[in-house]
Amino acid sequence: MKEESIVSQFKPVFFYKKNQWINLPDIASDATLLNVLRLQLHCTDVKEGCASGDCGACVVAVADTVDNPQFRAINSCLRFAHSVSGMAIYTAGDLAEMAGGHLHPVQQAMVDQHATQCGFCTPGFVMSLFSLYQNTRGVEQTPEQVKHAISGNLCRCTGYRPIVDAGCTMHLYPKVFASSIPSLPLLEDSAWQEGGYFQPRELTELLSLKAKHPQATLVAGATDVGLVVTQRYQKLPEIIDLTRTQALLAIESSPYVLNLGGAVIVQDAFDAMCQTRPALKAYFERFAGGSIRQSATLAGNIANGSPIGDSMPVLLALDAQLVLTKWHDQRVVRRTVGLHEFYLGYRQTVLDPTEIIEQILIPGTVEGEWCRAYKLSKRQEDDISIVAMAIALCIKGGILESVRIGIGGVAATPVRAYATERTLLQGGWCEQTITLAEQVLQEEFQPLSDLRGSAKYRKLALGNLLRRSWLQYSGQMATFADISQRP
Ligand SMILES: Cc1cc2nc3c(=O)[nH]c(=O)nc-3n(C[C@H](O)[C@H](O)[C@H](O)COP(=O)(O)OP(=O)(O)OC[C@H]3O[C@@H](n4cnc5c(N)ncnc54)[C@H](O)[C@@H]3O)c2cc1C
Ligand code: FES
Ligand code: FES
Image (cartoon, rainbow, N blue to C red; front, side):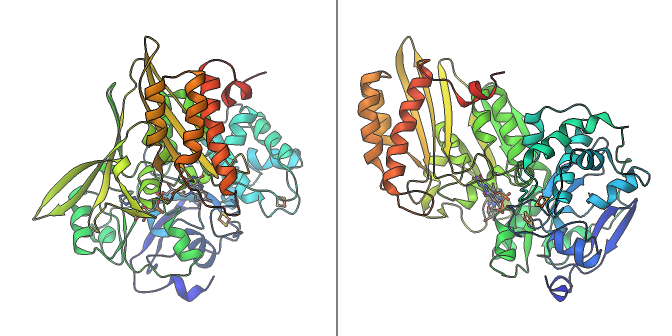
């Protein structure tokens, strides 16, 4: 971390910290929250481990100044400081202050359960647990809820059992909550607009900025873009942040379509999708870790275009459509593109340089629909897919009316398995056709071998996943969700 790299001719950042609003002038557009906290505010209670979102040592809690704010545990190493300007930021050192000089219940439980040894990971764990405690008003948590909350935190010496025990006992101590956060003193509009970091509030502002500055980096949760700065050491002098654009934050649901705005974070998007398709929950819980899911957006996952991105197999199987929007001839211009036609090649999409994903439209459930998704990776949480497969089919009166299969990890882009789908439609959803379709699926793609898995393994695994879906559909095999819910 070099101090000079974060101070330059840029606009200020405002944080509510330690019961006051702090104004930090001249913060570079690509300064990370972690660097600003440690180097400008000397908050050494937040740690840097990997600087790539993987370890959780840098997790802090952020909250908006609205009434009953949602506390979000995020990786400060990847988020840009400007993106959380105007919010309250909590680090582990704030908690004892909150508890009147004593340890906060989360911290006391960590001590009492012997949940820390070298202590390097501890502030990150404490902040993930604090967000859970604060959002649930200190009620008792199940081990599953605690594991979910700390799924983005790694501990290399203590082991997780005592940490989970701490999360499950933090409710036993006298309650301590963050005090309410006063509104940010009124800022001139220019405070949000000038400098190299733009945070437009209106969609038209966002689109015209993108048209004027096509070279600027569009950023949402920065869980991909942040790596460009922290791992590739590149400078991003101009950033357009779309997370304050109100129109992109909406989630609208009707029986026919779920409409997710282009800045909706994955955790909220997955929760909305699981309202009508609860069978997808176990799959979505395996997307990154808890703190990444609190920053990453669904549109960012789609636009990033990684062939192993985990949302796309599901969205392809559900036939999601994207509303792509830009500013042209002084007006907003929209087009709708199916996700299956969005990718042109490895990390190439049909988006033109001034266009954004404004909405993701997911068709509602239909009678006879059955949908499942599977991810194979070396770890249960916080790991990248080797292969992923999602299948959505519709069976009426025993007849297979439609089937879509979305796959990740076998080609340069996320793909539909059209040949396998055709085989199933021709032969019907039965044991005999599955045996044939398994072979078709194994031959439909030519995956690469890499350190995560060989091409042979990927092909075999794909066929097996299709068989798994058949076994589950026909009641011959329990789902992971069924197994994990057994007493
Ligand atoms: C530790 C770690 C674990 C991860 N684990 C997983 C995982 O398990 N599965 C998985 O799929 N991914 C994973 N990722 C990748 C990443 O979290 C996702 O791709 C995420 O959804 C990106 O969203 P974002 O908002 O952070 O995107 P950003 O980093 O802000 O942006 C990514 C790209 O999308 C563009 N973009 C963002 N929003 C829009 C929009 N509305 N319109 C047009 N372009 C847009 C940006 O310009 C940029 O090119 C992981 C990342 C990390 C660091
Ligand atoms: S430092 Fe490892 S996740 Fe941020
Ligand atoms: S206590 Fe040492 S890494 Fe967790």
